[in-house]
Image (cartoon, rainbow, N blue to C red; front, side):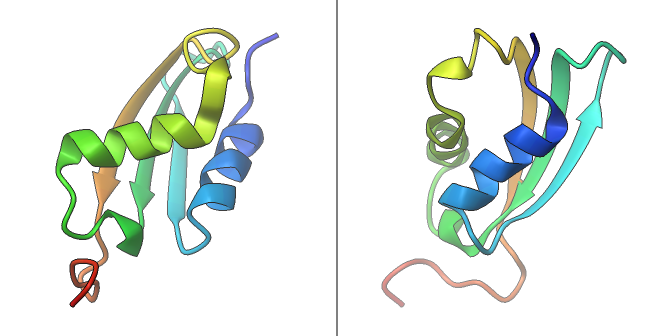
Length: 84
């Protein structure tokens, strides 16, 4: 059974409590998702690191129960890099 949007969002917000998450079902099949994730925890990190952080939040189901995730990550306009 594919992973649904509320479960994906739950896992992301568990790892990034400040996150704003927008989910879109790309194919209408509940198996191919797009997520737009905004979190201050991404500040100062490369886009690749940001994406790896989100994939880690989803866990081992990425590529299995969750077949595909088109991901966009953003830092809120008011966030500053960690340590500043």
